[in-house]
Length: 354
Ligand SMILES: O=P(O)(O)OC[C@H]1O[C@](O)(COP(=O)(O)O)[C@@H](O)[C@@H]1O
Ligand SMILES: [Mg+2]
Ligand SMILES: [Mg+2]
Image (cartoon, rainbow, N blue to C red; front, side, top):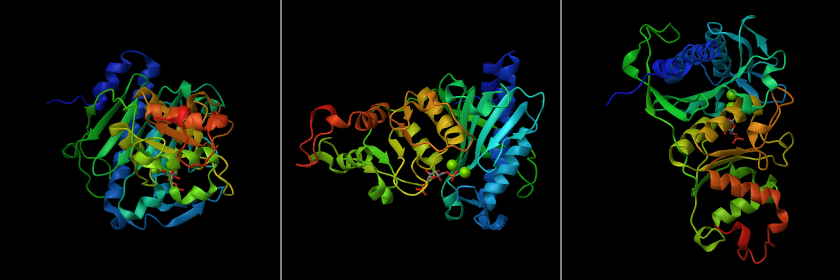
């Protein structure tokens, strides 16, 4: 069986369109940075103390050694592409790169940082927008030209949308070699397409949420999770499975592959009114990928891709995955009058009945 290469996929899409050629170059640059990051991750402690705390973001989140290295690798790679401005989770302000660039790129260089030193998948998320001026990074997600993420797991995978379906490419490990960690690639690395135009199953019995925050949730989230947990005896009438890897890229990959729903809602903890995830470089690219795979993504109520960002590091509550489940969660949020009394616990029927 032959697999199309990432390069061929991009060239076929870009043809002679110069804006698209710029996007293609940017995706290849990000893929190259991803390989270098994956090598650091594969070496783990042999490459240094990757989980060592190097600093803190303005809102108190820690910044680890690998966050910083991944950010540098991504920025260096993007200097080879027509990128006018780069916004990164690891940089307080956007950085100007190529003054003649046609694109704006937002990245989460390393998603799932709490997993750095425990050998669990982490990744790199990116969003590519047209460069429209100083506020280019604050365009709504619906304007994205391309989005994707790399996940550094048992396989190094690139999940990509160029606005016509969501596709998965796997790095062919026989196609490249490093002399040692951090040295340049010796041969041409090849990502091969293994899944074309994924479809997220619309229904699911699997949900992902950090249940340790349950006491801080609002009623919509609380009722939704309780109804799932009640299984066959509850209003859903079926058993659910739960997963939480604390690595959104890993959750997104699973959901794209076999369905499911991910929730990081706002909650009552200090600083968590809008959850934990960032709109511009986390929620938007994931939402674009989900919608292109016929899944959904909301902040609980609104479509993520319609939201106009107010600032680069803005947080947003995030729900994404199987379409029917995302829509159901919006109903728990939007129509509280339709949520019958909690007592008797599972007497709730009608609107929310599966
Ligand atoms: O530790 P928590 O609160 O469960 O949060 C985990 C979530 O936070 C994230 O790690 C946020 O991303 P970063 O690692 O880039 O900060 C997600 O990948 C993950 O789903
Ligand atoms: Mg992240
Ligand atoms: Mg990060």
